[in-house]
Length: 362
Image 1 (tube, rainbow, N blue to C red):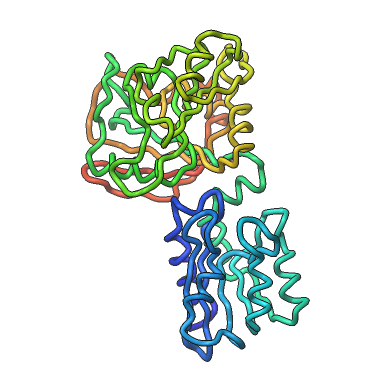
Image 2: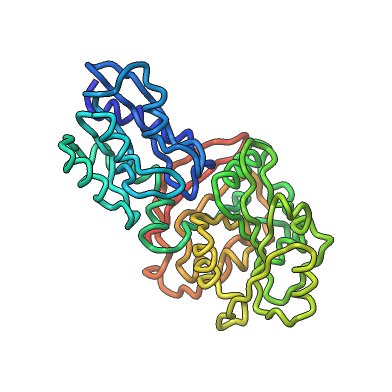
């Protein structure tokens, strides 16, 4: 096997951390000695051992003189765990092959420099595009200071997310619903507008798959939310953050705080709605690296209009409604040259539905 083949294995290991490593990156590591794999590991959960540590601890023999394959540049600073570079140097690893450098300013080539200064041979950029793609959320967060935003909605073949009377449960198949819950588990926060809460009363939790519940974020400029809704239940285990244009002196604000929710006052935009970009900055300050927007149409439209969306996941059900509610409203586009351009990353079939996974060309 060559360097690329071992890195492919490291990538497979890294992907096992999806939904658990965040806001840390997913990282996989493979240790090879005399052509044999003697250790493997991945970053299993934020706050726990990094992939490099797990691979060394799982090694079947002494790792001195071996080649270490890792999808992301090893860290060289102390955080929740000690620097991985120190461990690699101490264990007398001979060669380190790295998929891609780390955009974290605390690392960013410093890990590579530390290894080289210790006399270790370092090779970088092996399957770099794939290594960056795996951690697109992490790199976006580190390089822009904003969470990676995914918009997900289910629609009929003729582009309706609900009937003309507002009925939307369920447009998609059970298999697609399971996929939607997997998406929730992979994001740090899930965001909806107050209209979706009032109409559908969602719980916004992960139930159909194994995974952690994201932070629930409700955009509620006028504070129409009350304690009877599902997003206000079980707050000790699944917190809810309410973004509003009201301030702390408002009686409704105080009532929701007393019930256990967290509220944040966000300035309004030109339409007197919550400013979504400011809200995203607030979430970033809380170390929220990814946000899943599940609706409704007004929130989706605002996020697209403000160029805040990185990923668009559309579940297309083989149904036709005719008149109904559309997913995306008026973007004030008058010329085709102004259209939002998307790049199709994948197409999958779930039950009777098609899952279209796009990236927006910002």
